[in-house]
Image 1 (cartoon, rainbow, N blue to C red):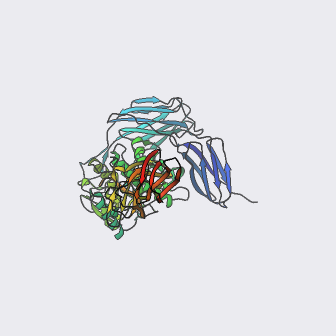
Image 2 (cartoon, helix red, strand yellow; image 1 turned 180 degrees about the vertical axis):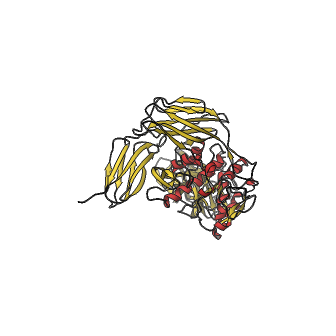
Image 3 (cartoon, rainbow, N blue to C red; image 1 turned 90 degrees about the vertical axis):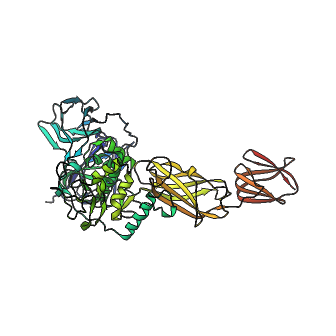
Length: 640
């Protein structure tokens, strides 16, 4: 008798914002032999059953949603429940106006089996009660406060508003989410209820507030290197010098972020029984509020999004299990399906940017709640702290750095990488998100990584005169899921010794995902020397959002150079402009310079020449009067 063992993956395909089921989608499966199978299930639940072991790749496609690709490794006993969270291409969450201490809790409740919206679900928060409407939506407002550290003892303790939230409907099991961290802002929840009797109780965990010291998993990264220190010094020169010297501009290391991440859920520490697959950006947007305090300033949240994204990306490349990349508990990086609008905005703002030790790689960007080296009574797992006012852990490869905004705070964490409370304090002190990332990670030789960079550069015309304007065409690739509208396109000419810039023509561009070409103008000064110049074009993140490229605020992302590309000719005394062209008379010669269509007529209307000028053209003419026409502009000229 032969027994054939089969494995089953049950996919629930959901809208990533509401968690309601998506019924109209296609699935492309590539099996271990490379054979391609196509499915159109017709409902939101797709059961995939196979007997062959090995790696299976899945691609989910639905109209108006971003495609989602993932994989699973099937063995003899693989039975998985997987949520596929598809991100809408067009969804945009409008801002709401709230009082400083007010929180709007809203969300969607669905049936766990059908994934359809549930109406008339009772939601209770404290003494407040509301019900879902026919679309499964609910909202409720209440007053709360910002979490703060209790400084009465030299130990780490956060005072925060924690509330139990109850969901109930006849015919369904009650669902209780206990100790939910409530902070000012807009909180969006996704809840599913199971049919039956009784109740399900779930304990809410927040990484910064609830992580235990033993849950800080120690894993050393790269050691500091001379090149890393050198790069840090050069970058600090740029960031602290009001004069930008393009020679010192260091392109950020490029890292194309992974498109998706497999998050283990229903976990005991790192052992998980369920999986949620989503885009990396949705992971950051929905998870950042589970590690950072969502009511903190925007600069802190943006800095945190880089660390959260890098940590998740690293685990995509180094998964902790065959069938999920990272766990969702305090043993890894906390992820819950709820989110705040503030952290979602931060994730979109920095989309694709992370932390990297070098190009085409990503760092396991560690962070902990309080990295200050003041050892208190409990909870410091840093075996070699740097002392009060300093962060770092030299015995694990992290140099000591001054972090004076955290002076007096008891250590809680490992001292490596970003200090979470430090970002909050630095943000309140006026520092920007990129400064914080550089501050905490550059001592390790790590830097901010960029998902975008130049792929090509051209200009027209390339042979020009003083005071002439030419157009630059810059091709840029972006691996970010979202567009970036705070990118400045700058340009300079360089002759090997001197730089010529044109700040009035610096332009802000909206860099969209994928490949695109962007343009700006460049006008040469009237006293520019006649020679050929390198064309150097740069993209910058407009950190201070003033629509200018200025140091020390803005972040240089990438640059591209074409050597000896723009050639400037000397000015002629009797030179005259006509449209995009210039001309002058030299003896019996008419000299035309530039690019454009030109017609030359005799006084009786006879066409002498009709031509497209490309650069420079000389015409030998007989003595007499002529009519020169270009772009509807007419000039009468005399050949003596």
